Image (cartoon, rainbow, N blue to C red; front, side):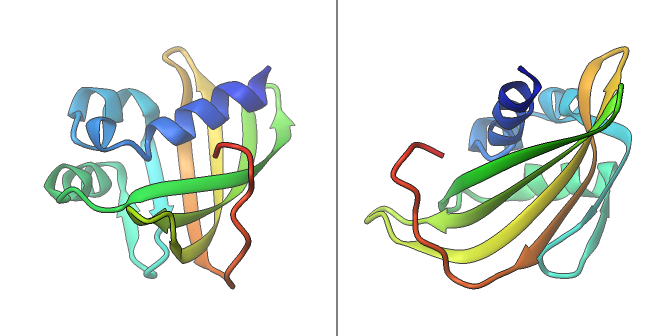
Length: 128
């Protein structure tokens, strides 16, 4: 099921090991990738890879409420909510997320991503 595949790839991008693996980042992010960050910063594939590789170990990322909208045979939009998760289980930096995933010869790759600050939401009881 496409929702499960793209959800898994999105969650993979939340993991510190992947965020520090240039080869895996190159595989997951389309060459024409662009991001409108939560901060308002615009990133290209090269600039986001550089930022992620330089990132220090931060809080875990919690995500929930994934929804998929197919936009064609080779394009889909994935939306969800995310937040930072501290060691005591508290959430902060609540964000609405939207990603466009494009199917290429290399598989499904993220073509575009946007994060928008949002109000606090209740942590779902199910995992991620």
